[in-house]
Amino acid sequence: MALSDSELIYRINNGDEKAFNELIERYQNRVYNTAYRIMGNHEDALDLAQESFIRIYKNLKNFKGRSSFSTWLFRITTNLCLDELRKRKRKPELQEENFQNIYKEEDNPERISLSRELNQLIQEKIDLLAPEQKIVFTLREFQGLSYQEIADITGISIGTVKSRLSRARQNLREDLNKIIGKGGLE
Image 1 (cartoon, helix red, strand yellow):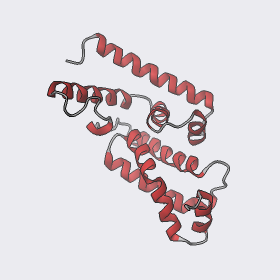
Image 2: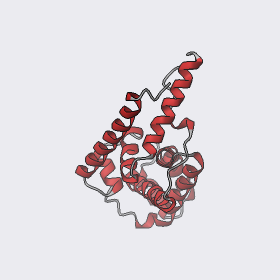
Image 3: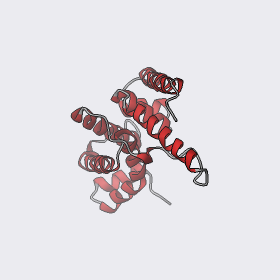
Image 4: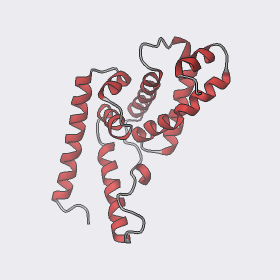
């Protein structure tokens, strides 16, 4: 039977390095995916996921358990991403694999090309969101987190989460409608 996060944390705080490896294995994919969706590229996501686990290792003794461990971990991850975005003051690089293709591979080349163009367009518009909106949007739409989990991770109220998510969706809707209205996808 797998150990709970609390049991692993207890073991880590008592010097059990294998327990830390188990904690990494449990969360590494979700942490990477969160960083990837926020940053927009593989290298940055790897760096920030690694930095998240380094911060966890260094500060685990300070974890008070007022929230779940996963909430604390994702708060660290999103804060690192937000700090990096602010530091760079540039939008993330586009990566074609940010979105799965809408169509199956056996579809004709024209549909595949249209799907890639649409995926790229959506990612470009997400990248233009304010960092605070982008993080809330990513946690909700790509990670499937609840409003409460997002509020805990970001340190904002549920009302603010809903407001930022609403603004992000509205901004995306307006931007995409402008392009579709102009016949932007050819």
